Length: 142
Image 1 (tube, rainbow, N blue to C red):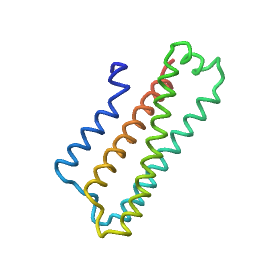
Image 2: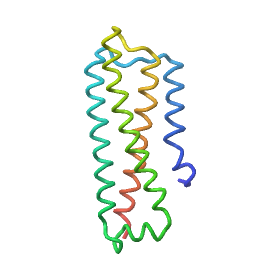
Image 3: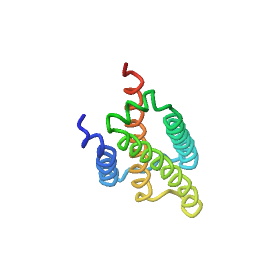
Image 4: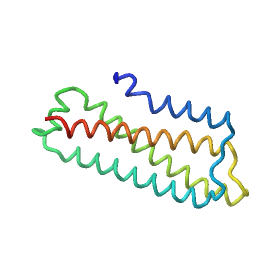
């Protein structure tokens, strides 16, 4: 995968998914309160994993894998990806929390909310996947 594709595919694919979600007028499952609670838990777990990965990378000595990453010049990209995944997970959790407040005022969440939820959720998942796949490549490298 090229560096350009790697940089932008979470943004692009989540935007495409949001357009499809809007076009088909998809809604969240009927039992929205439990669904939002489960999504919030998932977002918190993913965010915690990313924060832990960030802490581990920061603690690595310079003569280990971290030194080799710095030498290749890809450290700015990796830190950007980790930051994007961390913020994406946090925003996903915030959107889930906002859904609880919207549920108190309506019987069903509106389509626009489910579109926002889908865009942010897919973005958070793809950003997590990108960081995880890179971390696994780093671990496999001899």
